[in-house]
Image 1: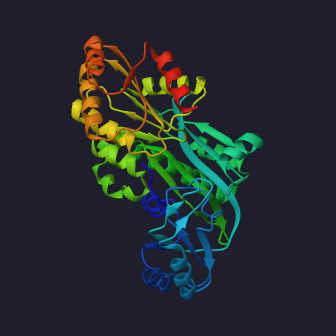
Image 2 (image 1 turned 60 degrees about the horizontal axis):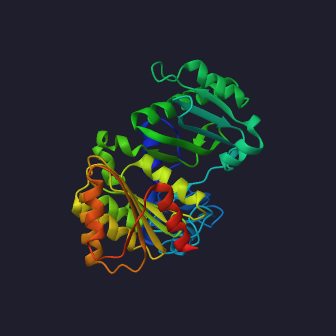
Length: 386
């Protein structure tokens, strides 16, 4: 689950990571009132959406007075903001963050994520902040300094000093930098985050470190340990079909192709998408009904896939185990009878009650194509959308 910048900064403050003074507004009038309460001087108005590249898309406005804050907020709120990460449809701006914009020197990067090869959290810092860190890593990897953290030992003091020295910080700046990195690690672990990032991290005219931007993503698998986080989720930032799927305890992921995919299991989803691509086509989405879905949940998943207008054909690939093939078949037949199906459907069943599932499909008088195996299914569905 992604947090908005203003939400992430509230957590930063709790973990003693300095952030600019400010607050979030949902109307221009509220934005102006917030600006009046801040130190007068340069101010910034930032669109709050779950996408990066807001500055490039015009979602970050530097202004000099509360009146200009009002105008900037009025220009952003209610508008669709298009950034390099939103796609051409953009994201609707429903709230803006109003903050002081102090003078500073240098833009640095600091972030923590999981390195799955090392099976450990890794802290990364760079003097090339303000840029996309992936681009820095690709073109100037020598500008990135890393410290892998043993979860059993935690983030050690020497690791913070190593990172600060990599940024050529000395004296009090080295000490405050090492403390900030340690606090960022505490936040990362305490929130079960999958990403905690500051970009840019700057040094103010007074020589203080300040997190100008903040990004936190929480591991969805750990949300049950943070019931207080539920209220931070913003359904307006979710794809409508993903939101609908979550209401039925289904996992739906939107992609860019034109083949709808229904599977039972994340690994099977990856294998299915690989074979579709090998066959020369692209998935429009995949919906994982999980291992214990019943006929009703299967029917709901089928309806969700069909409601995506980009879908030109559907591949259903089920490995029957806890979810029996005959149960899946009943759900698909039920949904197909109640929803107007305008696209061809390829079904591959394997495992528990496979023969019964295929019998139900073949005797349903509905237009299904039953594939022999996964490769055959991928080839058939790819041929249909060419």
